[in-house]
Length: 468
Ligand SMILES: *Cc1c(COP(=O)(O)O)cnc(C)c1O
Image 1: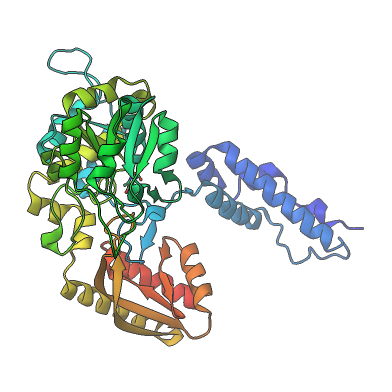
Image 2 (image 1 turned 30 degrees about the vertical axis):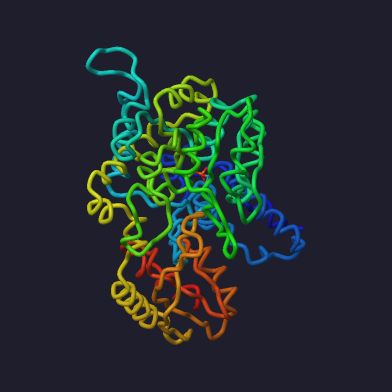
């Protein structure tokens, strides 16, 4: 038998062919060699499956150059980043699965600076003494929230865990039954409480909790009164909740601090921009909350982080707790957070510079114009393969913020002619950059609210490919 397998080129011949020397320079020898071996093994199998009969090579081109091309693809696939760019056409501004907040330009630059050089992360340059990483944002956070002291940890879940642990381990924490929330499937107040070593004391009912409920529950072991913003749901109908001010008054009488997990923690009131109902950090401090916690990457529009702010003695106990070290943020997060917070020194500047705020407050005329532009691009490139129309719709805030707030938008609806809408969506997710859209009523819906500059053209290109 003239075994075609014998004509499979040797590894070193393939390694010298095509663009492989260049790829070895780029990625190193090992991943390229591994890919050559994988490709050759596949070719051997194919030839074996074809029976090795006759003079043919089962339609396989065994020239080193041809094999090298297969290896190139294999190497590029293996070395492509797993975490890669996605175009968010869902209109969900704070999409947790898509990485929540997109950073501002200056926050991005700050990350780049911090990543590629040494910094004064924990060095006081004036005295030459050891500094604290919290110093880089504490002043800004205090200015923006009115708090006496502040620190930052990995995320708001970490902020809640650290605060409960440092301030109430072994003691009782009183929470309304209407506020025992679960966020994002894994953060549940009762479970975080158990982890912290504090004992949960539930008061009131799901829909109504009154001041007497808190008063009656207070005892010698009470360490904290906890208020939690029910970020991702609303209780409607016959409801009663105790306002922060009232809770603070109850705490004062008993000498017990009030902690407020604000969830998003807006730094500026958003009602005047048509986004009502999200509590503002400085209002909570002004109302007398002893300690507040909130996320860095929800409405704030910064990096993943959890802010702890409030009375100096309480923040100090959090800082000194051993868990603080385990939950601390890195320099890139601090750099991005500092740059993001600086925008808020002027609310109008923040509205213009922070992408999350810009997206949430995008005027209807702009959304309509951008939808028209997107529809035009799609029609020009893929008009024959799909029905494309522009229609009114709603965007969501997402990220467990502003539940029930639906923002009017203009959508581009695409109905493929020769493909199911699910198959189209799957192809779009596989394109580079990936495109993620919504499906509703058999139509693919694209919301211009969350598209970044340049995304519209990329969406049209991806659609044209996916539809062809
Ligand atoms: C989102 C949220 C959390 C968790 O915050 P992460 O920053 O995602 O860890 C905790 N509490 C409330 C009320 C929230 O809304």
